[in-house]
Image 1: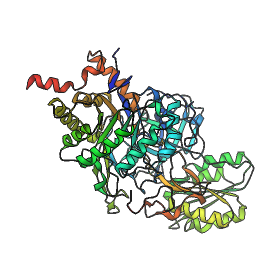
Image 2: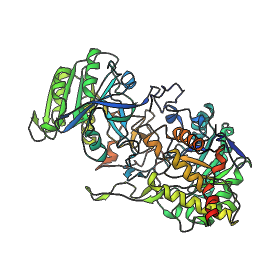
Image 3: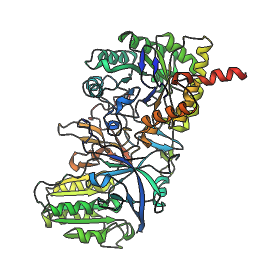
Image 4: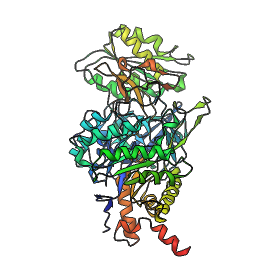
Length: 320
Length: 306
């Protein structure tokens, strides 16, 4: 038996596997296939202040080992979310990492405030601040490309929530120096980082000779981007080890389809793993990855999941 | 992968309460039918749950496939009484990578299948004459529907249309399943030259139909809806939207539909559909392969966009 439990700051989870925001809706759909309360945490689709229709269609294009999406943060708005979705997740005993988004830093804070005051708030094990959704009309609104804008959002959200509810900043890989953004978020009060959001991409329909997505560009996800996730987690974990900013837990996300994929992100420095696009291929992917990861660790002779967090850094130092 | 337990949770209204399973399906028969491939899978558990209008989502390319997205097909027919478990039939038009892979499968090949998914065609509570309209292989679910309607005492007329004779699907089955059949082709290679919309009004009128069921391309479904409404019949249409997951989590298969409260929302065709009342679909927003968000839709983009 491998001890799969992990602590993310002040929160203890029975295991490190989660859904990824936007890849699991808000729980009811996947609960038909597995009990969502068995996950370390269920991560909800990013919710904003008001109801939002999202973009027109086509919203999706398949790519080699991945896909582009251009959903545009469709959602019910925070009031309907806490009343229906969060209440339902609480009723089935799920631990919930709530992903929030906003068009302004003030909107992020407002959404966090409504969440904190909601009756189901006690099932919330953390808040993931989606500062990196690429599907916004104005690229300038992607907070995660600017350290100051990122820090402002994180600080405002942090203020809204009790100390024992950790705030995770979800970072974009589409930046020149992800360490600078990570550092700004941690210094602004982030208790952890989620890495990575999708990469901005584009596909063209060569029969119609026009962009495949109605929104023209979209977020690239799936196994094809896993090396980017590994690289960015590695860089940020290294920067923490070098003392450039306070070490905080990293939730790894990007192209995880199997237990082996998950272990790769963990060895690079992730303390937890989210399973995203693979869920579209296999609705049981999150629990399957958890099972596979546990078997893999047992096979490799580990007693506890936490022994392998960042393991590749330690091994590299031996040979350097 | 073994069969999954049936859903027993208290799902809310967004997700139908009916059960769904994920099973490894084994292909037991595959045959060419005109321009299409008709496949039969042993897929335990799906037949017992399925109803006409629902669909299945197939993973393509095997467990390590680089094509991650599921391909969704309306269920052509089911048989719960197979020796090795129930069977599910689908009809595939090989267009792209995934459908070409499925069409090329050989007997005994295995495919991960999730289903049944989506809401079925609603059946009338009392016997009323019905017209079933299929475009191309969109006709696939209609024969099974025709049988159930007939069992409920409904008189069933069918209209099948396609570009050419080889793109019609199920003419022989239609003769057996329906009380009357009208065939149209764009090129006149079979039946009446023209579109289903050219003959539909008359078929509705002559049969005094109260309900028109349609499945096929979106343009056809719009015509079916308009003609049915003009003739005083209710249209129930199964829409065609590309899906990534089929189970309600990816949010890609949305289209604008007006609810009973009069509000238009971008709803998922996989869980809120694929069958919708035709007069609730905002056809005005669907054009040229694009689905626009109507300005009056709930949460529609403001000037700043999304």
